[in-house]
Length: 289
Image (cartoon, rainbow, N blue to C red; front, side, top):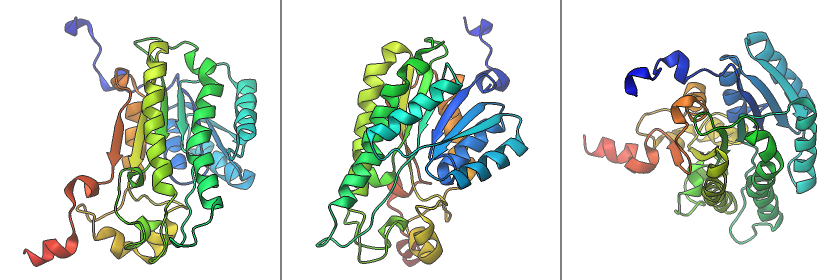
């Protein structure tokens, strides 16, 4: 059986037949993933709220090729917005091989005065929208899927969904100013992780593999505050001495969408250069030199 298998890179990582939806695909992590698919020949739909950004990104990606990019203006703040996105996508394609649920938001505030809207918005966008998007697009994901070539759902959470230390300390993980905290962000991402495992259990019999990615700090609009103002603080706990870059994220997303990962589902993958697992601190390392 092994001798008959085609284990070449060209076979394991062929994306030319892929049809992909990337929510939050106009900027940041979503744009990185979309470019990875485009440069490997896939058909990609990117979705987000701002048409000007979608136009700019889709034009840039189409100029790179060889894949093709289209955009859909959508606001996933509620079920109506999700339903609208799903309906528009179904007008343009009858199948979907990869759904990358990347849309998300954060909210920083003080512990004592953290607003209720900071919970409602994040739980709606970071969790609820992922649930309804998968439900709404399940029929497209089932189309043509098999045990050898399953469709994929990749939900983007965050290492913040795993960290339990006080978010008011330090730089708020690059998401909030010192003295404030992203109190609803971590719990929303923890819920995303749990939802992903439930979806993986439910959808595996339908040949839809569901995995969850937990990025650390990458350059994006969401982290721009911390990267611009508190980069040294962020790197204090980074043993690699750098934040994530496009090749790190796009490479993982391509793997999770490839034939090479057809038997992987229900996994939660940290992509943070070892900051979570090591507990490394630059100040401590210097003191021990």
